[in-house]
Image (spheres, rainbow, N blue to C red):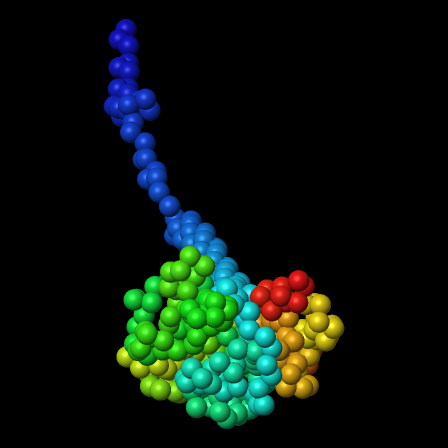
Length: 358
């Protein structure tokens, strides 16, 4: 018996093993959202660092301004202190008090007239507006800030020179013994004719000479003048108030007053004078200006009040303060951007006050 043939099975498809298959790999990187977040964070960090740097720079600039203001105020106070302490110094000689008939001319150049001013070692003008005559002859009104005080200090130089070194037209003081009477005296003259200076020392040598000095202190509306007087175009169009001094000396080869800017940023100067009415060398009262002419010879101390300001304004700052400057003066800022500070001190005129203590 024959068996029926088995039905042939259909061919089977070959399947690849999953172990041999290569899966699709996902690419690594940032999405657009992630990139935008990173950029935003970076910008915030940069903005924060920039703000910090700007704030530190502004703080540093303000500190520099304050440092300059303090330095200028202290330096101005020191200059005035040093000169007031020397007021009335005339070498080895003490001239008896002789009150002149009128207040001496601060601009005087004649030795004979300067001699009459010996008694007034300190002389002042209380808040003049305008500058009064005869002072206006050497201090034009445009060079003075109205309402600020003017101080005149007289004394001789602390350094002495031999007669042979005298310069023509320079005014000198010689103190020594008269060659005939041997009495202690003085001579005030120019160095043009040195034969005038014949006073002797105790050892018989010729006495040395000292320059006769007159210093006039005032506040000027500008620092560097482009001409003979201050204008609104000075200091690059932003005039800076400055403490200045007129000095008796030589202008070229002739006697005159030289103008010297001392300290910029000094906006106001107010003075109170300590007057000794009892003759013991100590002040008994303070006045903005002596009542009587003879009171100028009794000035033993000066209370100096300075108002210093920054040379540049400060951002987002308005000065509305009122500043007390001595007995009579109060000044209120005009809501500007300048920071200010008051410097006050009492200075003793050592020479005249010391003589009264003896």
